[in-house]
Length: 216
Image (cartoon, rainbow, N blue to C red; front, side, top):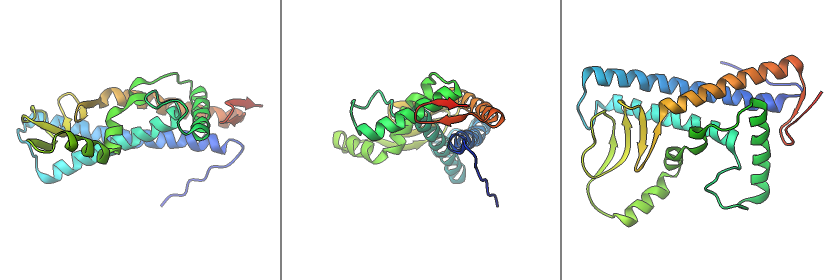
């Protein structure tokens, strides 16, 4: 069991920093498992559209864990600056999130992390019902592959979800995520979050996450 209390003038900033570190660690755990499973898959030259059921569930669980953790990191750092969303949507709420994420990016000294900022595959996983509804309205019947978890090319027809162990990519319909590139960005976030947390603990400036100012 564990109880981890956060207190002091910078408790809010510390909470966000620790959340970033924890989510990066969750993604790291999933990434290392996927990387090891990929090595085994390639070495043994598995050739099946459906691996052993337990292995398939574990791979899918690790893909989902990786996407979930990166989603949280992305939302914390890049909230309110979704370039795909019409301007003015959810005005005041979005402005609040935008200010908070701006403050964190300045505290972390992060300008842009393109993979974490985009994450189209993550959005597809999160809105699976909407994607499936739209898909089946456009293509109500045909040849579908629900999930494909090997390094070999998938069968012909529509492939819904795929993990490619050869290129370390998570794919959803026509979108794909290079998780090795994404993991490198997560490592940057974790390193900067740890450094920022040590800094505010050492010097204890008051961090205002809404105005992105420090008051010493």
